[in-house]
Amino acid sequence: MKKGKIIILSAPSGSGKSTIIEEIINDPDLHLEFSISATNREPRRGEVNGVNYYFMDTESFNKAISNDELVEYEEVYPGRFYGTLKKELERIISSGNNVILDIDVKGALNVKKIYGDTALSIFIMPPSIEILKHRLLSRGTESVEAINQRLSKAEYEISFANQFNKKIVNDVLLTAINEVRECIRQFINN
Image (cartoon, rainbow, N blue to C red; front, top):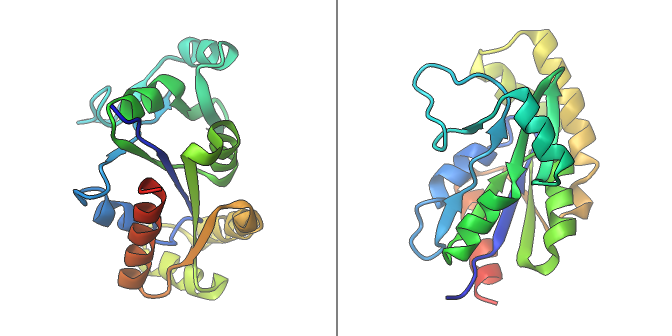
């Protein structure tokens, strides 16, 4: 059986990455399977281990780090870790499916470094910081201070965009979805 490939999507919060993934994940031509992340946080109500996340206690997560069992990880908040288990990627690509990762820029670049030509890294760009700010404000879910923090992080993340295989500007959502889909199609068919 032919092994699958790795597709990495990264973007600043509010750039439409999750929406794009939701639109392409079930495309039968792409054979995509979403990578389930590992975390040391407690499951929220309704979350299931192995479906929403691989839930681990802090000791187990630290052990996975020291045993080099993670392809990437991040301490998102003090003491709160998220990462991608190597065995999760191997499980998916061994089945012949292509794995899709939704991870931060540093994690994305690390995965690309490890997997080389078997991984495609795509950075979803907002049309501008001003439009990104408008999108985040229109969600109505965060304070102005939190949005300003996200915008500052977005500028930092955008500084890494040139290190990705492909940059796609999400100005018109449908166009961005189609560009991502076509980019993945070309990659997996080579």
